[in-house]
Length: 490
Image (cartoon, rainbow, N blue to C red; front, side, top):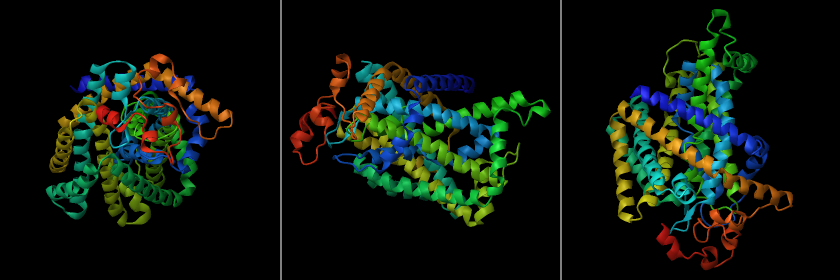
């Protein structure tokens, strides 16, 4: 099984890098050229009812920015050395182009929901764009199993571990507390989730970044040496004298690539589920913001952890220290023993927001497969049960199942994104043309798409009324497809 999983991930990495490079060329380096514009969009106010673009971004960040940003980066340094950080940067830049395309497609092929929000993602654009119900259902099932159950069990286990070691809490007690904390948000629906994440995620991420910046600031004198070490280790220069350059290069490359890809989730098919829920005037708006989210995760949050460890002097080549302990010692070197307490709460908030974000992803795929309210209610109860189970015990074999389902999910999504990227390119060219014409807020219409694509879109999506501003309009004008149609499609 491990042999099969290993080769599956090698194939996945090759596909992600290849498609990322292709999109970078085809979209003329959108992740670099449009980066300033995407940053400026963060301060744009929402002018329509529904889920704002910023709220959708924070839902996406809630699953990207997790315990992997704390523990995973430390593990990457241990396995691949400082050079892994360089290859993480390269991979993140390529992955940002995939994030742009898949999130733009999620907006193009989104469908209205009866609560007057939207749902979408790979399962939707596979069904509508590729006309494949079977492939769509397979992806949706993989998403539900991986994000709805397995990953949430792992997040609950991480929190239970941290609380047991720091406070001596019983694991079962932690599980029950998590259920009580999560239930109101889970049963509150996607609006409640997006509002909660828009407050919690920025606050937690900013707090962690501020502390990491403080630690790095205490060791500014070694910063140039650290940067030099990263570049030398990336190409095996540092190890060349000992005849280990080839091995060191391979380790740094593979570790950095895996960390960069799996941290920002570009191409995995998860983030488009968050991108689709936003109410925007143009699909590219959300494509740019989710592209920025992929960059923020890897190039900012992951870098903060890596820099903190390297400048603190706690990293020792060849040491087998666990990821959490390495990050904790780096933090304690600058702030003292209370750094361990902060790390416990950082793990809690990162893991908990990931857990909630994972549910949001799974919910959209549940609604695609079955529209009955009882099924959604049972799924929510099952999710809460998984939290308790995950907090009580860790199961390595379940992780292996998650690896396989995640790889299958990503390969299906990458195939679909590659086939449908022409529609994202049309949207991107339309957006650029409107901006060049002096239109500050481009508005998209289905008439910009080829007839074979426009005819597949949900009723009322990207027509003239749905694309324009809705402020001050009646419900019938805001939702031209009618609430009954929305209820049927949900």
